[in-house]
Length: 349
Ligand SMILES: [Zn+2]
Image 1 (cartoon, rainbow, N blue to C red):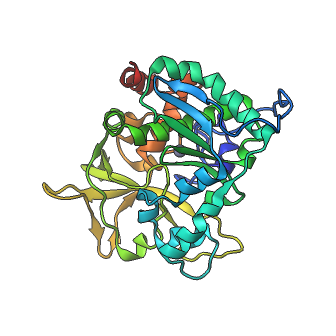
Image 2: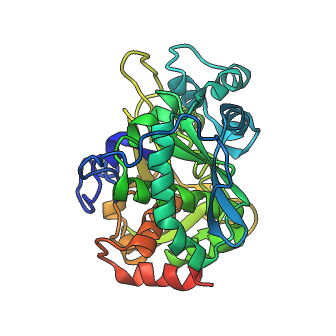
């Protein structure tokens, strides 16, 4: 998931807004508009053979029907949506049932224009040779879906084997679009290769620990990231002079959706939830009275020693790694080369 507003801060690695609020990302879209290369060819087929990105993998443009099918698929994302998740995405002041949400979610798939396909195809072709050399286990067909305005807060995101791109993030092509595609491709790879994903998560200190249950008040305003719908990986940090386990979680400051002003990213917050790890079962949130105990990323001892400082997009190990994956493939400002080196070794054939 990469929100457009944050994407505009491309290359502002290390720039800080409010603590861990979204808006601090390592990659995004900056730089001049590129002149569209060839004029769009409206007769171009929606499919074609696609662009090879691995030994058995190609990127192809999806039809609206294919995009709709992925959006409506019963995956982890749809099944984990909180009441806030559903309401904010439909900008509804009233509660939205899972059935009502599912009936609308497919509307997010839109028709490509020829010019958009040209830009995205050029970006995919530019990164493809480096990906082919890595011989990564991407799915056989990675679908590119254009999204209708407002879908997922106009963020780029992934579901299943598909990358969803909003129109506004395609206006600029070239290097920013290549970086955006690579970030999203990482999510598709991670979903398709769970074993590799666990090794990559471990390379930045995250181990599988089971998703902790949240108290109802917090669970109701939990925000689900389609790129990483579960929060089931713990990291060791130091807090109050003691070693503790923590899980990054994403939530809204307010449970109330104001249809006029509250977009998906308007009130998004991310912090580290302190948890215990029992011998059996998932991690358990530590409570202080009725409230969970949470820590800002910047005050979690040892956190950056493990995840590095190559990105400020810290909401989930999946996102930290997606930004680092871009740096592994295309280079860029790397503040913690040890992290990109660890990833490079795990990704090499
Ligand atoms: Zn992402």
